[in-house]
Image 1: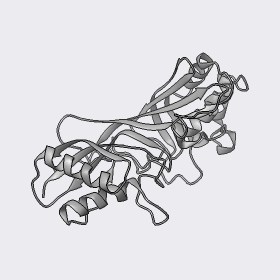
Image 2: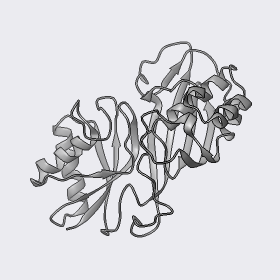
Image 3: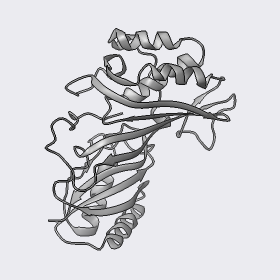
Image 4: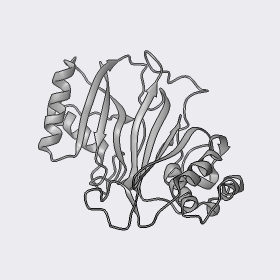
Length: 267
């Protein structure tokens, strides 16, 4: 049974999130529905991350096992046609046939996210639902300095949802950079895996620093408190994008205990 790795783009606004749920349409459900419509097969796909409602993706990765061999371009084009006919705002960007040892979730060694903030007086029209509108100016350099206090191996209890199901709050944050171009402020985060609401918690806390309400030392103190109550506000999902997933060359490594995440990555 061939396994296919697929790179997926989606608009998170119409969906309850990546994961299939009973309370509304999901990205996973849309793709599984397209596969069923095309092949007649009921499959359960697995994604590299379980994004929340309203969170977007430009490089989500998933895998699916199908019963027959497909030409890659035929499978991609056919799935996109079925998604389009169903009115879904999901696109399959790329498909690669992979070894059975590849696992979209457990073989991942790095995940990359982007959080977008637009700081201006006027409300968003074209960008509504696709960035966090902050109607005041912010100092991105202070935000970046505060972000650096969070980089490295830490207990991120302060910055994870009370509903997070990960076994441990300890994560290694490889990158948390803040840049600005005009009114657009971008926060880019990289790690092997993230805790539930971790990046949105970072964004809300860094906003306080950008507004001058917190200093970088205050952000460090919040981290060291290891207390959810010490966190700043959780930023809305609108500005969060799942950008890319990195894998080792070749097949996946689902049995690599040291490098496997413990099952959250739901930002």
